[in-house]
Length: 173
Image 1 (cartoon, helix red, strand yellow):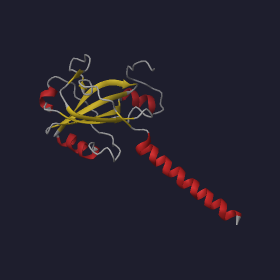
Image 2 (cartoon, helix red, strand yellow):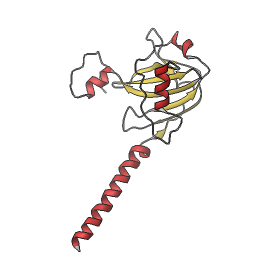
Image 3 (tube, rainbow, N blue to C red):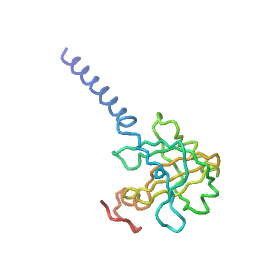
Image 4 (tube, one colour):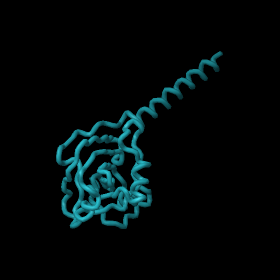
């Protein structure tokens, strides 16, 4: 009898722990980003100077303090990727990270396909927005915009455990 009670307690504990971990990963840590009109979407000019804002509408974003790469954003713009490419730095980081399913404006698979087939272009928004992390902005030919955070080379080299950093990195906070 005691064994059955212990098994039931263990089973219930495992279910509660599993459900809690799922909730925390998918919903718990995310918060809506407070809008900062005119400052939410910025791109780095070709000359490497400070990022400059671009025109956008319908901005929505989520972020979490638990990780610097949880940022996701969606917006629209009337600017074309071709026009922006004449003034702003392109990004080689063109594999968007998945967003939680409930943040349905950000479809990483569709955006990744658009980046691969050339119907979307990725730009560097902010270099080292957090140590070793860049903000990437992608704009489609239809004027849809997306932003996410991605580890840059400095971040990859720092966080892969090798402790060998071959790129000039900013000071760690």
